[in-house]
Image (cartoon, rainbow over the protein chains, first blue to last red):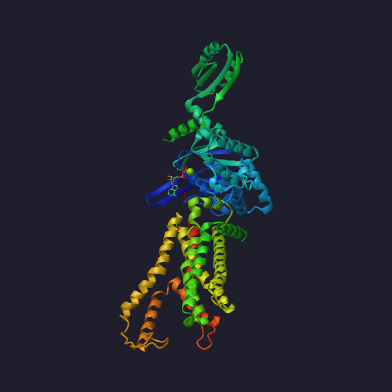
Length: 313
Length: 311
Ligand SMILES: Nc1ncnc2c1ncn2[C@@H]1O[C@H](COP(=O)(O)OP(=O)(O)O)[C@@H](O)[C@H]1O
Ligand SMILES: [Mg+2]
């Protein structure tokens, strides 16, 4: 059993074109644990698509190496592609073929036996909500339908690892919700998902782990808790306390706690900021009041991104 | 092997559903039938002089060979130019190559499909057009003639595959199928229209104008066949030799010589030349066509294996 689903070392990818050199990946050491929903977050042009292409052997690294499910991305890319489902960027379907025909062709290329494939195609079409459109030509599909079909083809062989490149880009809210639900469900089933996006608000909150990438370098990576730690130490700890009664009293008492820098009351919700972790003090004081909830605030991935970006510069 | 057949099957089915493929088959039939029409007129109009079976079939075969020389390359190009570039353009190649398939298997599958589709188009048009010619124009086609017309499919397949290989190569290296199409068509135009003209210009330049001949005043036709003056015959022999040399590397010219030889008849008996004789005197034509196919297929494989799919 390999510890990480994905592990790269000093991955560099240089594109050489007429306009000179672009270092799309500049020494990437990525570690994606098994069984998590892992976000690859970064703005456009930060190297997400390049990284995913290198992982499945579609492109060769200029230097460095990558192992996916224990297989080398250059020498054993076929083994990787046997086990990994990919939703690439800028893909397309055979427009004159139906959704089902497209999936059957791709499934055969996956090496799936005919009978299993037939059953599985119907299954994934149902899963992404395209059952009624199974025998319609892809030509007339909307962006949302095409993207659902793209997710379906990635799921065909029931892979243990999924690489999804900007899966929700340009999708309607309904499809976005479906995608998020499916991703969470798949991780619950024990699968690993690497999902890239530049829309941190859209997909951030379902990811438990992430790598923040910028200009081909990883700014930070790990679980939300791990990454929040440095953020909190630098920016302080935030809390939200919801009270039923006696809020003014509580506010006064909270102000007395050592290290608390900010307390504000608004509509029965008290916001607290502190220089260090004051969870214990807060709960012991709060226990004397009629408190509905006490929640330590986690920074959003957006805030984390800006924070780690600032750290580097 | 299994995946090669998966690709081949899908390519065949996709093409059989496309208007482009059937358009080309229709064009084939049209050219074929049109060439028999011309012969039909000839039979009715000059029945007396052209009655001989040999003349009619000879005329038919010449027209059919010409029709194939135009259209077989187009069929090859039609199947080749989009083979890789269109998949790149549409992005289907990303879905395909993210699966456990070797890149050369993708090309192998497409090549097999191309052979199947070319043979089908050629055979189909022959099987439609020849009976039409017999029924509509009263062209007298014997079983032997028909066998030769079917044999013609072999060189036509070679010609179509030569152009397929060339346009596959352009397709492998293009990110837009329209670029691949353009390059292939330019090559087709060059070999089909430009090079023959260039060749005859060169021949005229080398040989000068044909020698002046004095005509017999009361002759209805200038010469009986085979009765031309020796200097004129010599001139045209030299002329065609030069033209042939200039076009040695032209797949079209190689096809035309090879196919015409299929319909050549023996002087005394009027029977067709034996196949082994045809091949032994025209092996160079076969070799040139095969060389095109081998070279451009090889280059396509090498470049496709090396190329990374970006964007
Ligand atoms: N085929 C290519 N040729 C040259 N430069 C490229 C190519 N593909 C990507 N790039 C450049 O590499 C960088 C990373 O691109 P990409 O991996 O697509 O980032 P992202 O997916 O995060 O938007 C960008 O600067 C982009 O312009
Ligand atoms: Mg991208």
